[in-house]
Length: 191
Image (cartoon, rainbow, N blue to C red; front, side, top):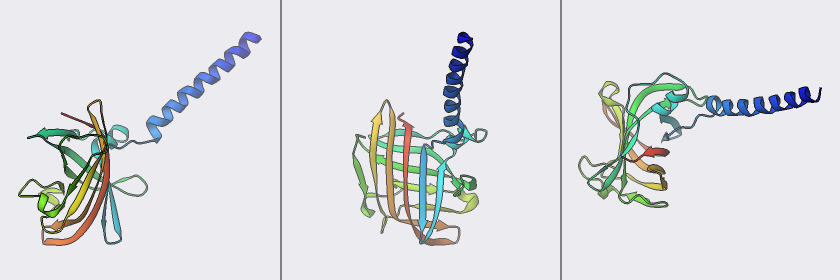
């Protein structure tokens, strides 16, 4: 009888541990990129497609987001994001985020961008829905500004947050509005 009670207690402890482990993989989704676009009083939320699909859907064929180093400057590339509503359901169309992060990515570093710091095609922020949808969000040289803050750079994985103001909203019919964009990223591999 004593062995049976001991076995029952051991089994209940073992079941308790395994069920709590399962909860984290199915109920708490960890996004690698989160972003909010605000135009006036309207907010739209976007998340990284690759990370979302690891938990919820089959894989898309898009490349995973990475941090690349070109000419001693770091860029977040392949940031394919999908719209998400307040209940966590995917909405809208996939768009690609490109973000300039600057040089020497150290903890606590803040990289600022003024209108004059973005020249030609080397813009620090773009979120492009492509020609099919005909719109996107872009840093402009006249009045956009922003910053990226590096939160951590450990084990070739980068985390940070960003905010951009007066981002131009382009549509197929021309400029339509300006947006404020804020977001964060983590677990971004450095390549």
